[in-house]
Length: 87
Figure (cartoon, one colour):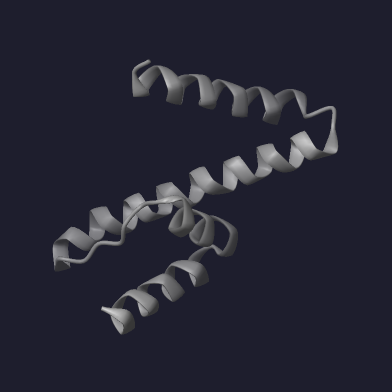
């Protein structure tokens, strides 16, 4: 399958979970976690887009998306500090 089809199906599933709600609590937790991962990936994407102006980028993977999605802006700041101190 093409990535566009997979992303479209995941987006439709998340949209349905948001509109209809999940009948089971674990499914609801999974849906909320997936939404937070997507938000974290988007935050990292925008950071990398604006970071190109100053030649800075963070990798977008499951770990960094989870940290930025669950912790928000403080998580991104922590990732930047970790990246600059370890490299």
